[in-house]
Image 1 (cartoon, helix red, strand yellow):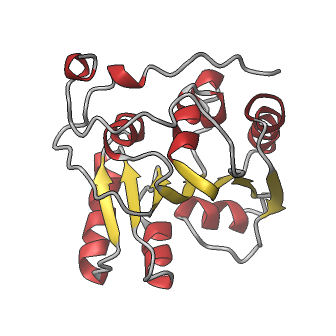
Image 2: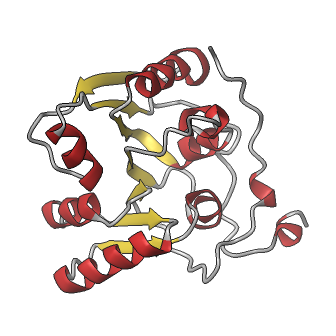
Length: 215
């Protein structure tokens, strides 16, 4: 079933608590970074790239923050926030080189909250550079199949579907699923040159209140 997509109301988003603006420079972003295993690996292996790892759950964020303090990658910035308002207030148009959404909550009782079914996904696409990539991984075949259908029918984006290698170990969930013998898959989604969204000219709110943004 194709999910209908409403227009995202970016101007109504309140800034996350303790919001801090970021510089207008190319970045990579991980949404739902958990305890930070992938973020720490990626930043260590790609010292030339700046990665912002966003995690909403306080306990997981504190684990990531602690490990980051021990490892000390200067190109990694852990952020404790809900990714939706954080992206609206922090990210500039066409700023993101790579976006990682690895093993998100499948939202079995609320399909409208799956990432490619959300109006917010259009906003995310506006933050992605031309040629930028989104990596979406899941161990649930139906989740990948639905996302694939949305990419074809709604978002009109090119993608490659891959099976995750059995020895991959990017996240704690991935390790657990692969050890159980489950099939993990990922979609590598590319934003083509000239791809347009309704938010291409929308500038970050930078901590403004919604009523300020409306002025």
